Image (tube, rainbow, N blue to C red; front, side):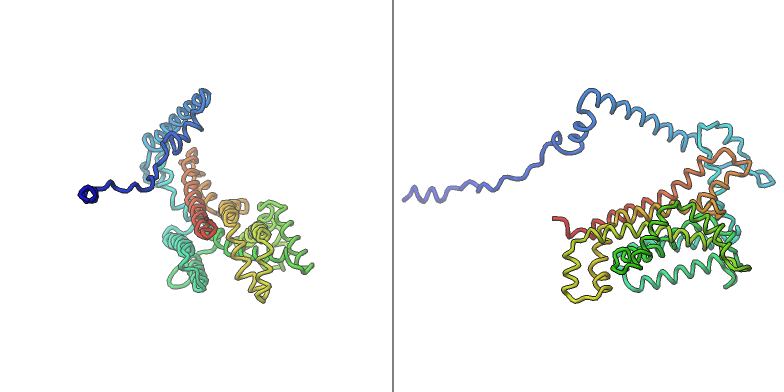
Length: 385
């Protein structure tokens, strides 16, 4: 009995729980394992990796020297207002002459818009960016967002044209730079997308006339380059107008871009519609929904969710394709950049201008790409198991 009491009073060892999960060693998974398997798996793989790493380091060091260390950021200006670029030319390519950007950035961003009115296109650019940010937030996806778009676009038109509220009138021939690029891209996407949805639905219609019309439109537009459409809109279309009637060149280019983008977007959306299982359509029909209820509440949301990557890819391509309007004499961002170095004092420094313009394009396109990736993950979260 005493032994039993002694055993019960003695401390008992702690209960052994399930084995704690341990991380695998870094040599098996992770960056180190990936590097060993992909970059240093054999002697020739190691040699190629080291050679490429050497070339990459040398290129990076040369880029830093050219872009920052040996670069010139400003140059003096004489009494006639002509820039003295002798210091830039003395570099002989060893360093960048960023002074061309500090001197010509207004012309690159705003084109030939009156200098003392540059605050108007600048405000329009900020309004465009704000409109993009608001539209990207899901909590603002309401019916009121359409009114915000209409009000903002009307305000942008008032600012760019002027003629009221004490602002002098500025014709469209004086517009240019980043503002024109954003106008063409924004209106192109805003009007091409709903047109593309209708065309995609029309190609799947059971009405032969509508289906044939949509097929002819898509195949005809996709069969020619955008340059051809811009030439048609700029040169051929005015020939069919009544005498004395003329439509603005910017509007004609905008219509050509909308029609071109809608044809490509329609095929992307049609792919999403075909990817849906037949059960979705049958379930919607079983609920007794009308065609437009079925399409708007069940079919289209799922189809668009499936094709977010190719949709955004088309948007990015459209944003960059707006630079083609230079062939019909519209001063978009790229055209303004090319014209900025026509002045004799700045000839030979086009690389710096193209780097600056390319950086602007990259910022907008990269933002669209990153947003689409996040939106795709968020909308398809229910599919992750």
